[in-house]
Image (cartoon, rainbow, N blue to C red; front, side, top):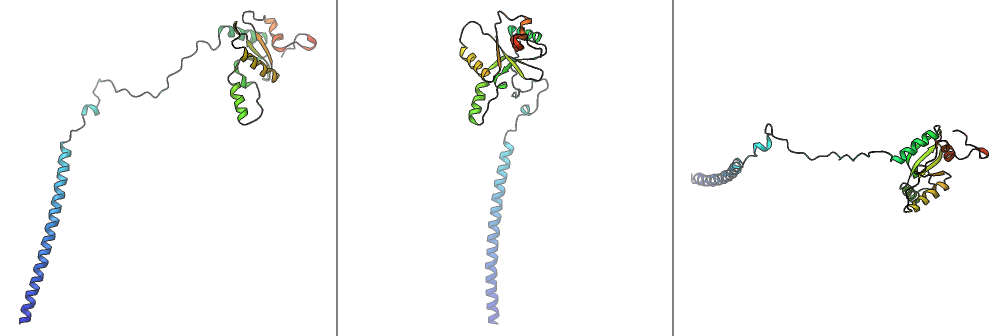
Length: 209
């Protein structure tokens, strides 16, 4: 009987300790849950008190001008009044009527009529230098072989003498006939073929074409 009473007392003590530990842990979990809930409520309250974005900024007002948008289109470059100047235009038509069986091309890059041999950096440098110069006119036959390069004599002054000499030396080295025309005293129509194509066989008039 004594052992039974002792067992009951010890068992009751253990149960009491376990029950106390359980209530302690449950109380701690409840306190932590309340802390989290309180923190969540503070966040929601702060969000509710924050000012909302202005409706006027989001919704366009009827009749109000639309906000300007940055332009992405390139500004168009001004167009030249004339592709050729007046004296170049007169010479162009003079060449067209003087050698109607040929093709006349104005404002041709020097690099387009001269072959540059070689390869690599040296050739690229030569091409870039040639690209800086333009011929006033290039006359070709119907098979597009170059017949002559026509250069309009500049106004009085020798400021570009070095450039003209470089162009002339380049054309001569390439075997291209160069003709210089004084716009103040242009050739007559019946003189254009001999001027552009050179004399014919035995010093006679040049053969057509």
